[in-house]
Every structure is written in C-alpha cells, then in structure tokens.
Length: 546
Image (tube, rainbow, N blue to C red):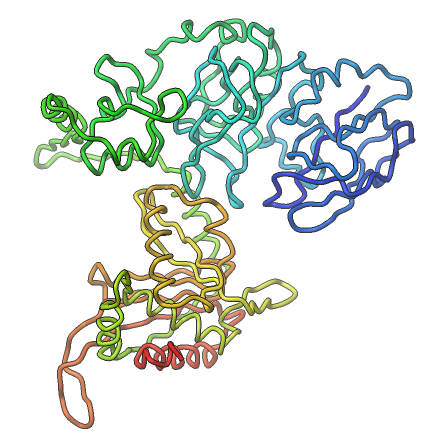
C-alpha cells in the first residue's frame, strides 16, 4: 500500500524546508534507511532517510523548491500502484502526515492518530501549529470562523494561546470550514486536528474520528461530520461560553476584535459594541479603538458596559471555608515546568553586592534632559551587565553534558511580569546598544509583552537575564536561573540610608544586586569578579559611555 511522506520537521524552529538534492528518482527502489533527499532547514542542510521500503512513485517537491512542514514530499509504494487518489487528496500543503519521521515520534499515548492517507479532493486537515520553540500544546482562545463559514487564504482562523503569548493563526488554504476539532477554551498537543477545510458539502466522514483518537486532551467530542458540514446557521450558539460585555454586541451577537484591541478597550473603558471595525469582515483592530470617539449617546451604553464588566465580588460569611479553583494557563504550566527543571537540575548559589547609586542618579537626571530621551535605572543596569559580560564571558555561558558553551555575543533577557505570569523578551546584541536604544527597546518589548503581542523570536536566544523588582519596593531577592543561561541578576530598590564616606556618616543611596549562578559553569570567584566589574560600571556611569 502506498505511503505519503511529508516534509519533516528537522529542527525545533523549522516551519518550512527546501529540497537541496534528491538522491532517488521516480521509479527507483527504496529500502528502509536509504537517504531520500538532502533538506535545507533554517539551521542546516540535513540528510532525510526513508523509514519505508518500496518504489518511489511520486516526488511532490522538486529540487530547489521550498514548502511548509507536512507538505507532500513523496509517495512510496508498490511498483505500478495507482496513486491518483492520494495525489488528488494529498497534494495540499497542509496535508496531514501519514507516517511521521522517527525523530518526531512521541509516546503512543500522547501522539495524535494520523489522518487517513487518502483525503477527498480539495480537503485539507489543519493541525495545531507550533507557534513557539517551547510549545508542546496550545489552547484555542477564540474561533474567528465557525463551521460553514467561507475561508480565504490569509483569513484569521483562531486565536491560540501558547506558553508565551496569545497569537493569531491564519489560514493558508481556502474553502469552507467543515469541522472544528478543538473547541474554544480547550487544550490539545501540537499536531492535533484543529480544523478541516474543503469544498462546501464535502463528506468528511471518518477523517475527524481517525485523527482525534489520540489528539485533544480536553476537547469536547465533536459533532457528527454530517452536522458540521452544514451551513453555519446549524451551529447552536447556546453552546458557546458567554463573552465578556466588552465583546458582546447589544443584540447579543458576537463582536470580533484582536486581542490587543480588546486590551486597549478594557484599559480605556471603551465599549467595543460602539466601535466600527476596519479589519477583515469588520474585525476591530488596535487603530479602531485608539481612534474611537464616543457618540453623544455613548455614556448610557458605556455605564452599562462598565457595570456588566466589573468582576462580581464574592461574599464569604465569617467563619466559613471558601476556595476558588483557577485553571492553569499554558503560560503558567510552562513557567512551573521550566523553573522546576532549572532549580532541580542546576546547582544554584547566590552572590550579593551593595552598589552606591548617587552618581547613577545624577547621570540619569542629566541624560533625561536630552529631548525624546528616557532612561531608567534598569536600563543602566542592563548596559552595565552587557559590558561586564564581555569582560567575564564565563558568566555568559551555558552547560552541556560534554562541554560548556561560551557565548561571545550578549543577548540579555529582561523579565517582564504579565497578567498570566512572566515572559522574558530578549535584547539581541545588547553590548552594541546605547543607553537610549536599550531604554526604547525595553519599553517597546515590555509594552507588547503585556499585550501578548510579542513574537516567539523576540523571546528566544538570551545568554543572560535581568529581573528587577525594585519598583515594588523589594530591596533584595534571589531569582531562579532562566535556562539555558548560567546566571540571572536580581535588582532591588534604591534605598536612601546612612552610609560611611571618607570616615563620615552621610546620607547615601544604595541598591542591592543578587547574582544567581549555576555552579556547573560558574565558580564563586568568577561570579564575584563579575559583580565587582558590574559595581564599578554602575557607580561610575561615565565609564559606560567610553
């Protein structure tokens, strides 16, 4: 029986691959273990071997061409076998893999079942995408299309919550949305069946059942294919969870708005029911909310919106036990997983040093007199870290079982608190940035982090991390290392207190810095020398400008 071979995912960040060379041609015999092709990924050119045997019946991606992962790469089967049905249904760029490469194999209980090898003509299986390098499962926050809706290439299908952000997922296909495999609010592993798109009225019996057997972990059982292939009017709106007031029209209908537009509307107290959307299909986007001017009749509606949106206060009689269960978000799950792994695998120790901040305060006041310049103390700490890391590269390292990797580039991650937890946007090549560039970049990244608009690439590749709780009045604390980094700096508040200068007790301003180190890569003396250099830069800011 013929087997569809799809473009494999050969790296954690790979989204598409280019066939550099075919080492087999149509009609050649293929044995298990034979090299079929050399495939260029985003990281390297790698040999791709066959896990099947038979005859190469079809090549789906010619040499030199690029295609997304899971695209039809080749078909292997018996010599002379009729593969017309596979070509009719499997040539789509979103075709589900019939046989995944062994490198991607997961335990049987977690691996989604494969879709049938032969799909009806024009039908495409869309799976839960990997939208970040650490994503293993995703939650559908919002469906922007419903069963029966027409879908064009580039339309936003859904908003998907990953471990790092809520991101819009667009369609790469066109047709009718025939089936939804993961309902709003439910979570499923990557590559689980997310949706089926195809010609209106197509019979998709058996496709969803065959695919979701090991897929969604909490998704409700899908309706029968016959029901879901009908126009959208057949869908029962009563099954939807009631939307917050800001996203429900006065007539009870659904309002479509981007996550950022919802956030801005919430912050400004804008009732989205009054905003006219300029996006696709009337969808409300950021600029619509920012440019919105309430009409004369708006106050009444606005008051209603505010009262409805206000969270209900729970009354608990004295002496009664009361608890509340909050479902863990994807971000919270990943924070728990990664920080537990860091704490229990890396032998942490902490070094603390006190830094005089008087000169830094004077320098910052002078710098901020320059028009359009705004530099914070945290920006000055980041700049000092970048320069100190160049002098002490062992701090800028990571542990591997067979080697220690020294990074000679400096990418500093800046911990940012968001509603659901913590994210770490990264300043790439920080050592080459000026103080004003660092300040502008941190404000931009932090703002977009809080609005869940950071891209995965903006949260990858850190070599060192800075965490600052000084703005909350915390004077000293210890952080857990953000692996694969070897160290993280905890920055406390600036405190005015008596200090000794030249044998005299005077009023001074000081700040506590705590460096958490991985003892596998950083010895105590190495960490101490780094803190000494860091202290010198911060206490003498002019040296950072040399």
